[in-house]
Image (cartoon, rainbow, N blue to C red; front, side, top):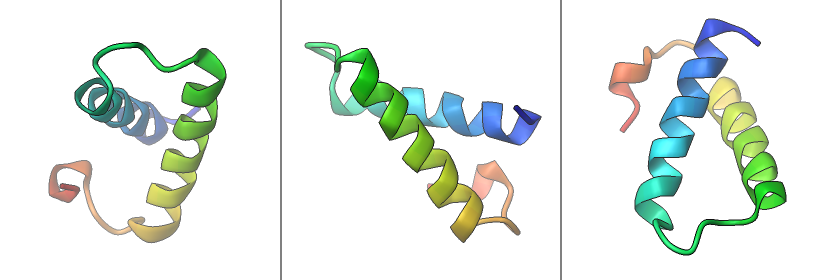
Length: 54
């Protein structure tokens, strides 16, 4: 996993924390959500730094 992907996963986890602080979503849901998040970000925002991603 690349450094950029790790940053994306951190962003995802922060987002999930705000979206669903309680109850915690099931692990399988989080796995899929992370996968989709990373693929989506990489597909759409290859030229932007993570600081510009709102």
